[in-house]
Each structure stands twice: as C-alpha cells, then as structure tokens.
Length: 242
Image (tube, rainbow, N blue to C red):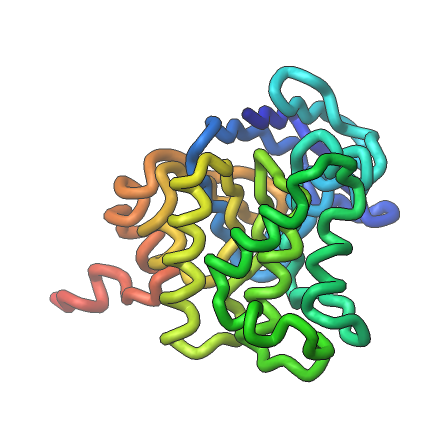
C-alpha cells in the first residue's frame, strides 16, 4: 500500500531521516520501533505531509504523495493519530469527530460516527461534553476516533498508549486489532514494543534516522538485541555470568 524509498528529512541543516526505505502491505499492522529521537514521529509527519522531504519518494497505491499538503494526503486516504492526542480542547466530542470528516463530501459520515461509538462507547456517553474535560484515556479514544472519521485506508498511529494505565493500554490495542480486521492498514509507532510486536505482522527498527533492522514481528520479538534494547532484558552475559 505504501512504499517509501531513500527518504531524507532535515530540520534546518540537521538530518532527521537519512535515506530510509520501507514497505507497508495492505491490510496489515506494521510497527516502527526506535528510541527517543530516532526519527519515528518525523517519519509519520512526513508521510502525512506535515514535513517535506529533502529527498526520496513516497508512493501510496503506486501514486506519489511526497510534497502533497496534509489535506490532500488525507483525501488520498491517510489519517494521522498524532503523539499527544492534539484534540480540539474547546470543542465537544461530537464536534471533534465532525472535524475528522472535514474533507469528506459523501453521505456516510453519520454511519462512520456510529462505528466510532461502537469502538468507543465512552465517547457516545460523552458526546456533548467539552473534549478538554475528558480523561487522558478518553482523549486518546477521541484522537483515534477523529482520525477514523476521514474513513482512511491507511492509519498512522503515534504512541497511542503513551501515559495510559495498563487497563487502557490493553483496550487500545484491542481496538487496533479491530480496526485492522475491518480492513484498515495501520503504521504504528509505539513505546510499548512488546504490545506493538504482538499486534504487528512486520516491524522496522529505526536508529538515528536510519533503518537498522526489519522483518516479521514474531521473529524480531525473539531477537536478543531487540529484546535487550526495547523490552528491557539484560544481555545474556549478565544473565549467565562466567
């Protein structure tokens, strides 16, 4: 569905992405792992048009989208759940969801809002509540729901479990699996590597703006280097001294 080739992105004169290439197959969850500052959020922002690449190409269903403005990327079928939620605090839950459908001109918006409420019954209960008064977990539900309102074929998710209690983290990942089962492709950046690899089919590892590893998620989950770097496991020599 999405193919990125030799992508370079700079912040001023400072390189943030240095020639990354990756492929996201249709109908799958693909995870992007990496430490803070590796370039994960930069990758998603570039795909969604918020940042312009200095070099490289991005193709969605064979059509180039690099250089398109964000609204045009949304119209092509890409929606972004940003890190930190970025909801409209002074608007109600319903108004936030309506903003997610802003670029649409079809007659299915009400149907899709009901589908969001099916995924997140709490949002239906809070429909007329000002979004800024929601709990952190409810705001994350709203950020995901708002992104779904554009009816995307590709959903970019940046740290959806950040700052949430374990119970809510499990709920968010159940929703991710449900969204994928409905046919939406998901590119997932997530600090919880164990959960990310458990729902993804493929994963890439990003370090200092470069892809340093990739493969099936189940294989990476067993890789000692991945487990040490992202799951907090000690090196084997420390576990078995002497």
